[in-house]
Image (cartoon, rainbow, N blue to C red; front, top):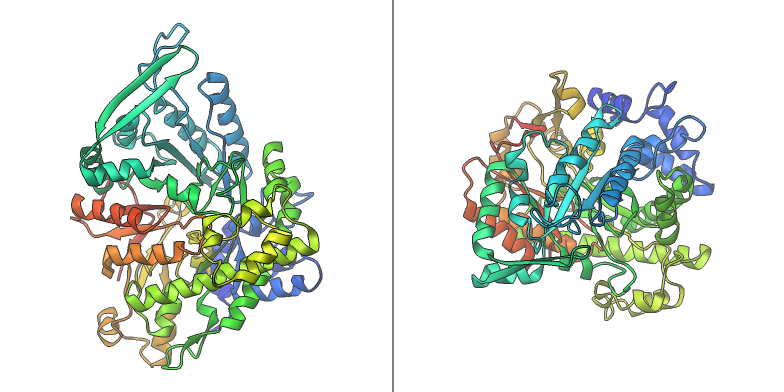
Amino acid sequence: MGPWYEDPVGAEIVRRKYLHEGERDFGDAVERISACFDGGLREKIRVALLNADFFPGGRSLFALGCKGKFKATTSNCYVLPSPADSLDSIFEVGKQMAVIFSQGGGCGVNVSRLRPQGARVRNASRTSTGAVSFVSFYDKIASLINQNGRRGALLVGLACDHPDLEEFLKVKQNDDRIQSANISILFDDTFMKAVALGAKYRLRFNVDSTGERIARELDAADFFRRFGDSNRDYAEPGAIFIDRVRSWNLLSADPEYRIEVANPCGEFFGNAYSACNLGSLNIYSLIGRPFTEQAELDADLLRERVAMAVEALDAIIDYGCELQPLAENRRNVQDYRQIGLGVFGLADALIALGIRYGGPTAILFCGRLFREIFLQALRTSNRLAREKGAFPRCRPDLLIRAPILQFLQSAEPNLLADIRQFGLRNASLLSVAPTGSISTMCGYSGGAEPLYGLAYQRTTHSLARQGKLFPVFARSVRDLMRKRGMEKAAAESLRQEFPYIVTAHDIDPIERVRMQAAIQTYVDNGISSTVNLPAGATTEAIMAIYRTAWQTGCKGITVFVAGSRRTAILGRSS
């Protein structure tokens, strides 16, 4: 086998998404990217990229080294402020969204501050078209602004107590023109408890400009069932459990930090104008003696690579600050220095260890894995704070009061003492992105997700317009077949001989949720996660997934039922 970037699939993705004009191959890109780092970190990053051990996020891969050539942001994720209840604010947020899209970023926006449909207004219209009507406006911006052949990525969220909640549920059902925006409901704990109790839930909105007070009750369980129906048929809206989001992060004890919503893929939650530099570690490459009874995670190598990744992502913040699309983004980046370290190749690593994804051993392994990743990220960010200074808005006395750090108090008292003294360099550390293009180009499973198939056809939005598919084979399965001399074995014979090899459609969905919950315990930000269900999945099964996700402490989750009316970009073949 040659280098991963000489594989036709990898080479094509690199060419289409990450090369600058004049660059011939990934080797040229590596020289450009690694040159943006100083000292010993430069060589570490060069080796990591060539070996697919670690990648900065896709925006960073493209934007590093772009200065003097073109405008492009190093950040994948942006959260815009919730527009105020005025046309000026609505259109200002739209303008800012367009600027971010034009430079390669994806946006999340919460429209819960906009008055509901039918509320009084003081203009010729007399009544408002409602918060939901502006989903189409923001979606149109995303669809018009081209990002190197793809549409802008957008998530629109609405609080569950907004009187337009039922209209929001139906927005993608009633308007097939909305193609770019993902939508999510921000469910609070009170709503989810009302679902469990079969109780009423109060929707409310106060219109400050007119003094109008709007309130009515909703049957929470009935709405939740209709939410399940919508997921079954349309794969949307997704769910964000906003109370968990706001209570389980490094700044949850800081009253000045208010999380608005998530980015389009759901791995990053932030305050107004926040931006995050993403990066991902290859867990498969950390498994020693794979496919043997002695297979194990190399814990020392894991800690070494986490430290390298945190330092690299922090350095990218400095390189990319002036490249941020908006002045408000630059201020937020300088104030909070948020990074989002995640993983790819996790499902491959479990196969290398002989562990079934979703089973009790896998859940235990993932909890321990992410505990170590989080602790090492904290240690490294704390060291960088001592050496270079904490993020400017850091208040160590509030940091250590965050429940996610208090959770570690008994096991890591010395680390928390160091954080109390020096703070952290970064206000956010871990975010598990889907890593779609990055993991596909080097042949590994994406994010924290299971294998989608042992082998499958994949396309992208830009290639789909050309009718092109390309084959993707699970790296761990291919390596296992080669090791056992089974290169020509059929998928079913592999499943029979190695029952721990499973794909997304083989895994009990509740096991899938419990895997996410085990990981979320040690992830201070979010996890991009989609539970795949076969055609014919029931509303009851979908509701059980969302209830379990809330009960186990997940921050958000989505469900995709095969054959639903939303077009998928993955085609399963085995």
